[in-house]
Image (cartoon, rainbow over all chains, first blue to last red; front, side, top):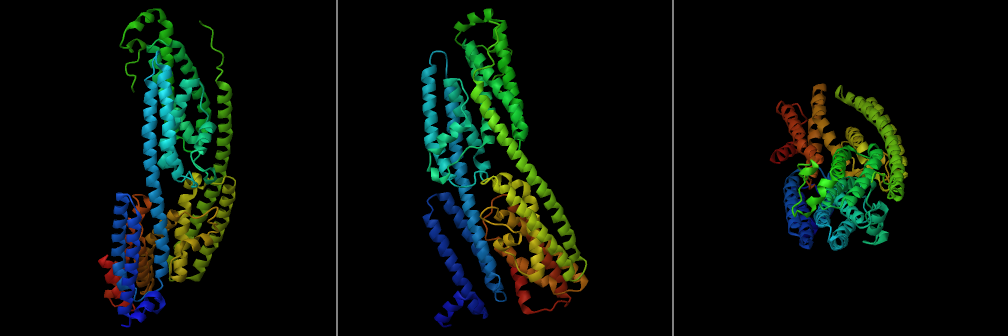
Length: 318
Length: 241
């Protein structure tokens, strides 16, 4: 066949009537698709993405092959393929983005947890040092990991990928509010957190703003940590501090009871509220025990390993 | 020692923030309520449209049936317009409420796709489907995954249609359905899907395809179809897949 003719038939699907010519057209298209895939896979630096694209190409290949035989009757279906190529691009991009958000989220979660553990290392003598280090770590989480997440989500609909990042954001809220409470005894507001996130990216790109729901879910987790902190403080003899925590948790619990029914999908929140009440009761019981048996309790202070059993709380870790 | 602490001095800003949240969440809840009201109407419309469209199984193609079903598509358009209007009040939150109309939208897509196929024998592409539902992609678009799921729903309807058309005497119908479904299935195979609902629906599509192949085979082997050679080739291909 004349090569020129072959080219024109390749370009103009309407003309394709002869079976052999049509087959060649298909081969050309297949070749073009493969080389396109190849070039995009060369650009990808991460090995797993390379793998994904390679497997995608093989699916494409097997999908194309039989088509080379069917389309002798139908030239009208090529618009369908063209459209589906667009959907493929859309889905690929969305999935890649989601993967990247999940990855960034995992880093945020892991490192926020570390900050929380750092706060728990606090004891009577070293509070300033421990808190300074915790704040330092928190700043590092914000600068290194939160900023990655924020940049990933720049200018997108935050609600679409919320499921991918919600737990990370909750953990981050927990760490940030815990640090603030230990430092100043106040609640870190959502507006303050969001203001700090704005500076992590270009403001014109509408950086991620934490939504109310994630913030409240984070607060619910915070009370669990505060419970641990309060028990630790009591065993360390800082009863005042524990009572301050107790009042704070009470405030949060009371405010949240009003908000829970209004929240979008409040199943998770309801569960957290139950846990929160348990935590609160634990703190209150601990404060009560110290209050009632205060005089017997003081001598225990000297003992190097804290004994929780007098609080009537066999398992504090649960 | 027994003096109660003052009703905590932390409260001022704390209370203020939670008060703001309450207002904010209240607004969201009322938006959601309005959305749900529209979606309820949408569900009713979709059911009605479906019931009207189901008449195609009762007889050979009847323009009257299609016309009646098409009237409902106009109603749907109006309802989507109302949704878009509500959503205009809270920009950037399309996906916050997306779950509320997802299901109805998918069914609506499957119905208009089926209708369009009955009319023209071709697939309604995403932008065209948006147009029919009166959606503006810049503010309230049709989510591509919803569109694709709608296509899968539509494919579920086709085997039944082929069977009933043959019973009603149209022996050429299975060939048309088979060709369309083969193309659709092949196009779907271009997508890299995640392990989600769409994937599950797509996996079900091959059973529709197989069923239509069987119907086509039954008609063909008895020499009932029009029997041009192209269709046989098309059939072999689908078996290879």
